[in-house]
Amino acid sequence: MKEFKKRVLAGICLAPLIACLFYFLPLKWFFLFLSLVALLAIFEGMTMTGVKERFLLLLLAVISLIPLYQKLPALYLLWLVLSPVVYLFVKFLRGGSTQQGINSEIMKGINVMLLCEVFIVLPIFYLYLLKEINRYFPLILLFTLWASDTSAYFVGKAFGKRPLVPRISPKKTYEGLFGAILGSMMVIILSHRVMGVGILESVLLGGIIGMLAQIGDVFESVGKRICDVKDSSSLIPGHGGILDRIDSFIFTAPFVYHYLTGIKG
Image (cartoon, rainbow, N blue to C red):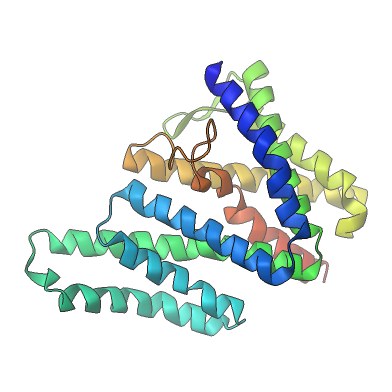
């Protein structure tokens, strides 16, 4: 109960601030805000995995935001190939090749860096792209994921009996998944005019977003189980770290952007 109170108080204090930042920040300042979020999330990921040279890896991962901001996707893909090369070069320049266990250390560092560049930097940047289309879209997605998460928690708490992924996240249930989908649907239905979709289409869209949000949550949970940690950090009382709060965006932000610009564009 104490943890729940912390969660509620932190939500009451931070939710209005985050919502205001999503809505009121001009595009360039929104990008800087998202860059800070990505920076903190990557640092949590590096710390959680226990990689060495984390500040070097952090810098290389954050650099991947530059070609994305400049709308140079080919250069971003090239950086995914070159960043491990730069990491290797710096390691060898420092005489790292003589250290014991250097092979596993290098492979671990490269794997974590690439995961951060793809599953943190890219989804975060998609929020910027959504704001480019419409200033309301990132805020709607934010509210959708909050509603999905809240509904999943209360429905799972009240009715949850059948475990969804017991070895990965023991508290997740099929009933909670249904709650997540229901909460997501409700917000998208209420926002269907702004989103430019019909009622029936908004039901489908909301359902997919709810499912993808849960998949993102499970995806991050796998990483935490591998690292044997409960939360990515203790930065936000009752909620864990930044990485714990943005895992729902991993698959939802790219999907919503490409749905609205591709299918609806």
